[in-house]
Length: 252
Image 1 (spheres, helix red, strand yellow):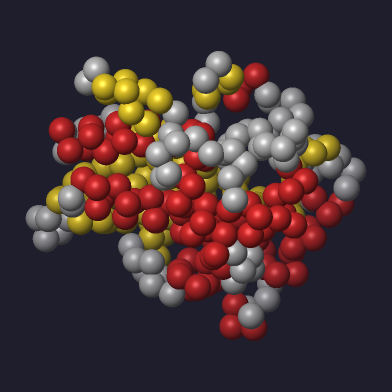
Image 2 (cartoon, rainbow, N blue to C red):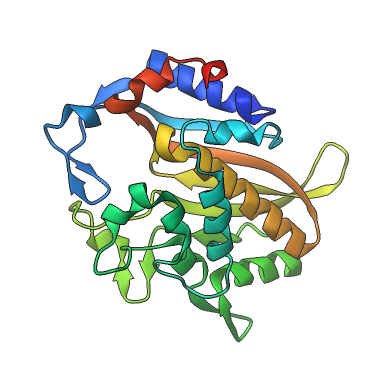
């Protein structure tokens, strides 16, 4: 597994790997749109991409392509709000990207809905995210602190919408693990698993939001924050964006 110490190194190496080693794939759908035959959406893809990020140093490079830090900060606040929000206000900061995916004034799903779905922990109703926090406080060695995103919401299942007519989450889950570091200090790591990530448009935001979530949960548990371990089944870039892959980050 590659280990990165800052975001410049992460973004530049990922872009280079996709450009030099990505395999061309022609998907039929993009989000909930049919794009078969549209060459702009041919992808360069690397499967099962894994890495570890040890520090969020130079975070500005996560937004070098998307210029979306303001959106990411607003989106994170909605994710941890404590109540399901759809569509919210954050999307308006990237309205040119998100507006086309509104369906009857709302999105097919939001992370706010998935994080704030009601569950029962020790006989008490609370959000799924809060249940994870209480579990980590109760059992620092647990392997069950998994905040799933893909799956069920209320009476709906993402598995019912595999035909491409409905948006489903690119994130599968966030797994929180409290373990000792090399200084014998207990720290909270996050293992983030995605089925899919569009490198140019979303990857930097995905990294940043996962890191914020790790820090937020660590603070609530009262423990030092650790590393991000990230697995992406399909890391890809669309042909319309390939020119950005071969352009040095120093040119932005």
